[in-house]
Amino acid sequence: MKLILLFLSAALVNNFVLRYFLGICPFLGVTGKIRAAVTMGFATTFVMTLTAAIIWLVNHFILVQFNLPFLEYVAAILVIASLVQLIEMFIRKTSPVLYRALGIYLPLITTNCSIFFVALFIPLRNYGFIESIIFGFGAGLGFTLVMLIMAGIREELDFADIPKSLQGASITLITAGLLALAFMGFTGLISV
Amino acid sequence: MNLILISTLSMGGLAAAFALFLSIAHRKLKVEEDPRVEKILEILPGANCGACGYASCHALAEEIAKGNASVNSCVAGGNDTSQKIAEILGVESEVIQNKIAFLRCGASQLERKKKAEYKGIKNCQAADIIAGGELICAYGCLGYGDCQSACLFDAISMRDGLPQIDLARCTGCGNCVKACPRDLISLEVLDEEPHYRVVCSSLDKGKKARTACEKACTACGICAKVCPFDACHVIDNLAVIDERNCQGCGICAERCPTGAIRYSG
Image 1 (cartoon, each protein chain N blue to C red):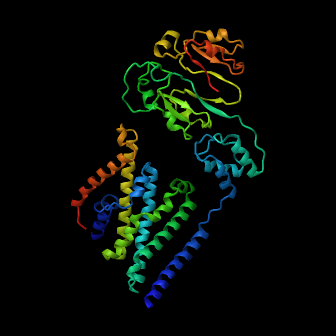
Image 2 (cartoon, chains in turn blue, cyan):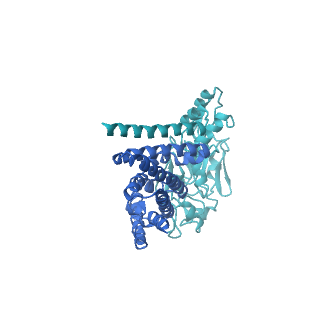
Image 3 (cartoon, chains in turn orange, purple):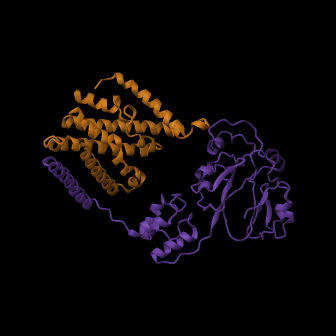
């Protein structure tokens, strides 16, 4: 039960994009088309889940054992960069079309702040191994969900009659603000 | 001192472990790629316009390197591009005819008469479906610029509700031809000789065409009478210029009472 609550908390209540304002760059940059947004979301979810697992291992067996908590940042960068390299090779091998469609955004997952946040949050909250994985996976799925919602709205916005001064970036930011407001409604669900 | 040693060793060890893992993964997941594909891709325009029939410039580069597509497949790049690609592959390239897009409607926003006010989605495709938009003329340019947004080379700009095609930028890829719901744009030969073309597509009879638009071809037949080379004819209430006979003298354009024949480069 606790794990389910943790999952819901990471995905909906404390949604990374709309609650903590993390990972805004892919949120605004890749949400023009639904397909690209969902692919980006799942790639990020994959990296996040693996990062959560590995960062817990690194933290538990190296940083805590040798009393080196100040190296958290360095370790997180190492883990994330290597994982993104791995997923890039994997996608290039399995689906060249997807590799070209994602283009520059694939290596940019490295600098996605939401993944870094996962890596720093786990030692802070003292999550266990399973809890860490659930947390990373939930946060990733929450990110994917928000990307999907945003891309869907933006595809509809293409045909809307928007006043000239609000076209482009400004209507996107207004939409993002309204979405964040709507997601605040989940706050009453649970408090984790 | 001890702390520095431990931190260096632990992080170094971690990095070494990841490096080892990545190098194994790299060997397992290696993708072999023809080095010529990259070179050809650099020469191609990179607009992914799709005029060659392949999904992207990268897909065409792969097919050319494999030998499945000919070196002059790139429509947008023209002769320069095919020459350079031919050099890389060490083959001869045939010269291809350059083409440009040409709009067969010449009436600006004020000259086209309206039958109603259109307040729907502001693009030609939608306007054309809903009772032909606000124009009386069922053949003319709707002026919402679908061709402009389809053009990947910035060659089309809208002026007075009519697309202006920049001949220097137009590559003849044909994306605007597909985008126009009224089939007003066609690809025409671009060479040194002067060309006169009919800038109207209306098949309505004289009087009806005239009430719809000030610039309409009314099928009066003057061009057919004055043409010394038998190049102008009136077919289905519309003047048609036969490019095989046309010598580019321009008498038809001078004598056309509505200005529906123009010099087009």
